[in-house]
Structure formats: C-alpha cells, structure tokens
Length: 615
Image (tube, rainbow, N blue to C red; front, side):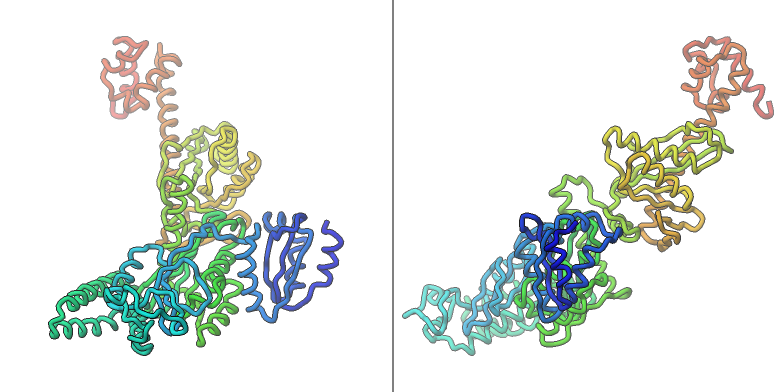
C-alpha cells in the first residue's frame, strides 16, 4: 500500500508536460520518466494492471515518494529527462553498459584563430566535433594530413585578446605562421580552417586539387622540399579517399540507427553517411533492459545519440535519419533536431528498398558488436549466427536462442513408441547432447500423451542435475502438441523457457497463447534453421524407432529356434543388430559369439535362411 503522502501527491499531480522522479524509502531516485500529462502518466504506473512486467511491479513496490518538474513542452521534458538520467543513473531506467568515451577531433571554430586537437570531452562551447573514432587509425591519419598541409596554431592564447611578444618555436620550424603577432591575417587563417573542415567532413576531393596546384607551384619555384612535403600529403589524401570509397554505400546524406538485443543487454549503432560514403560509426551498449521492448531500447539509443549531448556535436546533422522501428519520441526528436539544424531533419522508418538495406547493415553491426562483447566479457565461446537474431526478432523472444532443443515422436502403428531430443548450440548441431527416449506409458499412437511424457522427463532431469535449460524448445507438430508440451514443462518446474511448434504441412509456426500462426518467408534464414532442427529431430527419432523394430523382429524369429534363450538372443542382438545382418553372416562369425558353437550356429542359419523369401 502506498503511503498517505504519496497518495496525496498522486491526487494533486498537474496535467502539464514534465518529468517525474520516483524515490525509495532511502530517498534515492529509482526511476525517472517524462510525460505529456504528468497526472495521467504517473497514475498509470500505480494502476492495478496485471499485464505490467515484473520489473515495473518491483519498481512500484519500492516507491514511497515522488518529485515532479513541470516544463513548457514535451520537447523540453525529453531534454530534461535525458540530462537527469545521465546525472542520477536510476536503477530501473535503461542504462548504458559501456561508458567508455571515444576520442573526437575538435576544431574550435568559435575562436577567431581556431585550434585543432583530440579530446574525449564534449563541451557545448560552439566547437565542431568529428568522431567518435572507435578505431584511432583513421583519426591519426587525418591529423597527420592536416599537420602536413596546414599551419594551425597549437598555443592556447586567447587571440587576439592576449598574445605573446614574439612567436614560439612552431613558427621557426614552419608549423605556424604566427597569427599571434599579426604575421598571418584572420582571413587567411579562416580560409585555411575552411579547408581543414572540408577534409574532416569527408570531402577530400575538394582539397586535393588545391594541394596539387600548390605542389606544382612549389616545384616550378624550385622549392623542392615544400613540393616533396605536398606530394606526401597528396598521397595521404588519396589514401583517405580510397578508404572512403571502399566503405561507399548507396545513399545520400543520412544517419542510420540499428539495434540488437540479447535478454537484458542491448547495443545500438549509428552509421554516418555523407555524399553516399560511410564516414563513421558510433556505438553504445545498454543494460538493465529486462522486459523492456525494442521500442524502449530504440528510444534510449536515439536519446543517447541526439539528445543527451545537448546541441554540441550536432552541427553536421543529416537531412534524414533512418530508424528500424517506431518509438514514442520520434516526432519530438524530429522537432528538436530540425530546430537545432535550422532546417527540416526527417526521421524515417523504411520498410523496403535501399533504405531498408541500410538499416539491415546497421543492425548487423549492432549484432556483431553485441556478440563481440559477449565473447570478450562473458565467456561465450562462439558467436551467434545472424539467423538466430532474426529468429529472436521474428518470434519476439526475450533472448537470442543460442541453445535450442527439438522434440519429435516416432512409432510403428502404435508400437516401438520413441522420442528424440536434438540440441543445437549457436545454430549448429550439438550431437553430444542428443537424447532418445523409449516412451514408458502405454499410450500407443497417442502423440499428445507421449509428448507430455518426454518433455516432462527431459526437464525434470535437467533441473535435477542443474544443467542449463534451452532458450527455445521446438515441438514437431501443431497447436495440440505445443499445448501439452508447455504444460508438461511447467509441471516439471521449467517456467522461463520459450516454446514454439512447427507444423509440417504449411510450415506454420505456433506460439503459446496465440491463435494465429506465424508464417515466416519460405526462403528466410530463420525458417531454414527451424526446418533443419526439426528434420534432424525427425531423423534421430526414426533411426531409433527402426533400431528397436529390427531388434523386435530378430528376437521374435530367434525365440522360435530351439536352444536360443533370452541370453543368447541378447548376445546376437548386440553382435549383429538385425535379421538381415544375421542371415548374411558366416557360421564362423556366429560361432565366435559367446555361448555359441559351430553346430548351434548352423542351426540358427538353417532356421533363418529357410524362412527367407525364395528359399
């Protein structure tokens, strides 16, 4: 029950936009949210809604107090929420997993004589930022080219307000033209800075012609040292251009955001495309997702990339940003970015065509980075295939189904009823984990009761031996088999395992609690993977059924031969396995079996071959 003071606050909440902060008994902020109407949004948290996730219910259980901050618009609420989350890191908000700060190239364009240097700190001071550079190689190459070509100052004087009496060593070694003492005008210096910004913005072709002209002029003036330096810089520019061409993608001026998630972990990637070239990539890892959907992850990523930094670093905003799905604040984000850029910045959720292909490229980057982090930090030995992520998305699973088990039932007109359990790990068969079962119940050809028995036995043993449970169970069959399998697993104590069934006729996928099946595209990688797992379970079950049937046939025929009792029947079964193999054997091979003589071997062969067709 919520405290009286909290109840009073809930009754007096304003209907205006704002931000709300939930606090626990110790006064710590456990959750920060925004709302277009504070009253409606906050009260919805305390409604008796049984569909709320366990995480949300646990959060509400801890809340004993709340604060609200009223703002003028939904856009202001979004900005304030982002800043407060960044400051307080509440437990129940989606959190950044990796707070690593990648380096940027900073150009202080707000100064009359700008400087250029590397920084990991973003400040809202009017500077231009290029990056972040997750790979410092391209950053060093760009800085090397700039230092070869341009004489930007490295001092920290507030020019022209403060200046030294004479130039520093950089002037004497040719690295600066001494604007500090007035030997280079502000106009000349700004022209040089303009070329630097062109180069860093991914347009080296515009600078190349000017550098080539200077190189030729230096050669004609017999300034061969200067010409050689410009030649080397020209080669470095060409190298940068080649690198960008190898990363060329179809498109114009766009940002592309992709996401991937595995349970409560997530990764978001932003690809920057300018003039049809992929110029950079930014990424962030997120944790504490729990039961939050993709929409919540996408909203957190968009906030991190575009809102959490304020206005700095957003001077080079594209005309279009591609997102893989809808999220609550997309319209508000578009309005904020358009105001920042001074022009329309569109946010788009493409469904097909080249833009959808770009989104898939960004999502693949996110998947691979998430897998890389798992391999490096969590002891995962093998990367999950892209098909597993696509399967997770198609089936709306909470985690990537790295470990999948498939059950199938096989029998011969109600006899030799057996089951198989085949296991796939990271999309590949794990034959050491395969299991087959003889159905103990006298169910005959009742596949439903047989399926319930084998699923219950499988999970009871896994739980008893404290073995890892699969992330996904595939049942070969339809809705009926799926229902009994889910009940059997729950009765065994396996409550957090995802189940589906795959029906052979139409290759329809059934999910618990859903009346309509999912129809995956016939040529899609997720369906091919499910078919492969299902077919392997069928093969393994059929093989075991045939083996038992052969043994029954052999036992039946051997029991009619005088002198062949149960122990000798078992010995022949272990040695030959089937009637055909025994019938085709040599007498000496049979006589070599323990308990058999040459005379008994002849008697066995005579009995079997006499019954053979055409004998």
